[in-house]
Image (cartoon, rainbow, N blue to C red; front, top):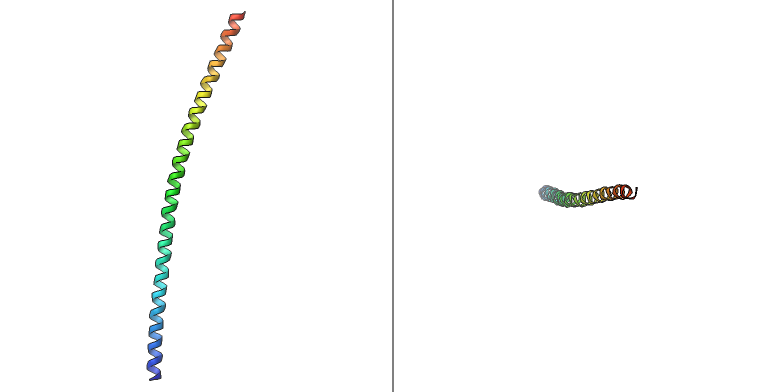
Length: 83
């Protein structure tokens, strides 16, 4: 009977170990998938932010360049007028 008990306990222990190993593996997979989803969402938001900032900064730079062009033109006209 001791041999049967030992065999049965070993069988139960191996089954429990395998169950826990698979459960741990599934938790790791779920965690990595959630991490990947969060990273993908973050990268999309970051790219959208960069695009918006780039558009705004380009618009401001073009506006400043146009203002400088008009200012330079005004200076040329004024200096010509004064001569």
